[in-house]
Length: 300
Image 1 (tube, rainbow, N blue to C red):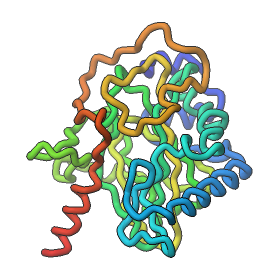
Image 2: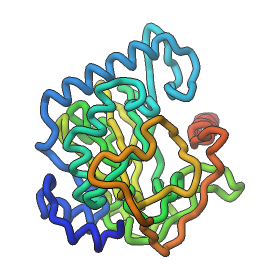
Image 3: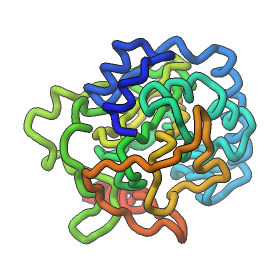
Image 4: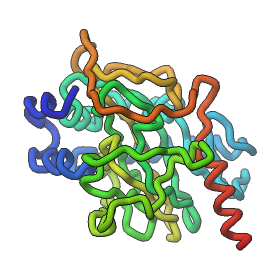
């Protein structure tokens, strides 16, 4: 659904002013709609996944590990498709106010696309360079929204999500480098003049929802604090928005309707989107390239 059509429907869970902020800036934080009970349940599910990861020695399709991960001292970068691995993650994705907020920004008919849990381990959880998301999973329109929930209080020292407000209204950048490596990175030299003044930190207490438009430029710094920054991320779209490339993070819940009715017609936004690599044989993320860059920088 195009945004002009979304706005013909009143916001029911978000404050109208907060939805207006999201439409204008491409990002926002929503507090007070996720209960303490949900935060407790999600943290319990997270703890169960961390315990399971202690039996994993190498990155696989489920767990993406940080360097130094061991059974005694686990260090995780990401859990892919958490909703496929624990009932509380699945229930949250489909039944909580997170899906209601998605309906406020996508339109009343909403389906799930994919999910991930990013950990940002204490004292070294890695930075993520400036990038846009939609080039990794292009759709027929730009309704997809990433809705994250902070599982712990998050301040500036923990490497929170950063976004460049208003950047969703600008151009889409290439997520390839000059050698056609999929790097999911926008060099800062390529950003428009004065971008620094529009950077916002998406922080808040546990249970806060962090919303990202699929076109907004965002990233994060390393976590140098003694506290983790776990962020559960679910991507939703309008029911009439359809991906036209293989799903990078497939799960049985891909395309699951969570609010409203199934689409009878597709929504088409004529603005073009760069096509990513073919993920049908498996997603090859930017991790290896970023690790190589870090190793080269350390050697200089």
